[in-house]
Image (cartoon, rainbow over all chains, first blue to last red; front, side):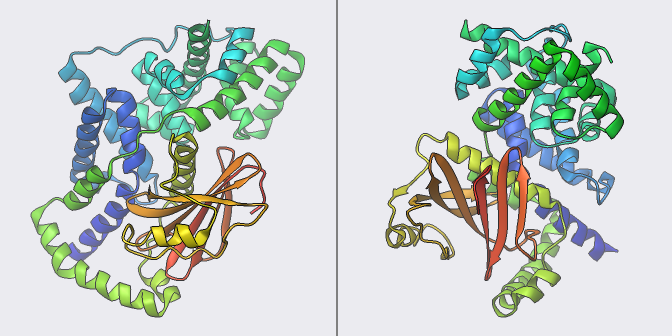
Length: 172
Length: 239
């Protein structure tokens, strides 16, 4: 039994460490700086190790780690900084039409401008966009965010619309 | 279907991730609503922009080493690791040298192969975004390959030296997941092609050549001896 457990730890550990880049990228965009991102990733792995018995083999390990990272951020880092959740998710009318300048801006936007626009969004909006970019399914994103799948669809749609608008406004 | 409903679904529609009924409903709506069709078009542009231009912040090598050293953290597990796993790994390395097939069956764990493809695309995008993607610039493979000596713990074997159609541009040391990689850069017209050569131990590498598309990029994985070779290619270009 102990051998099996050790084998599980090794196997999951080997796979989990493969997601360090993904987790650090997400952490960086959540925390906004590299030192906090590193701390957040380390704390995430420490928590993951302690909670390994809760991981269901065969499910998405990356999504599980992202959930731990986000929960750690919400419970520790955001509280420590005393920063409340920043709004921004629902600031865009869901049927907001696309302006010509948004299309031009998208064609020309540079990497740093894109990063600035993304960082201007609320934490949940940033997270949902990044998790989607990482290839997580809506079901997995919902598990990470602790919300319904339908909520993910609308959050993602609004977050992307907000991002488009921010990019467009910045280019004006 | 209302415009609000359609706009929540255009992204999944663009990715072919909707059930047939919903997909047909979105398609029908887009055909009759110019505003939503425009949103669909721009949303596809946004996906491409995010995938290709959003800066990535990978973990530093130092952090990866710290994480690897700390996992598993409990002292008892660490003792077990040293006592049992290290000899096993040494044995595995011998098996690897003798019979790679047996090594793969016995040692390589099944896992999320998509992680390999995702990492390949992430690394390729990092190359595209990098201000200085190459450490050594040369179209001569006999200058590029020797440059890796002393910088990697393996000799990267690459069968393709580049030619007039796919000229070699140079190389660099990069990172693939938790390990160093030899990165060879080729071009095809205006496109960049990244070829990563990595050690295979501990990765769920496919037995046979595997070709997949992800986020608009074509990724090919294959194995060359004890190393696994990986190519991340730009969409639409031949292997």
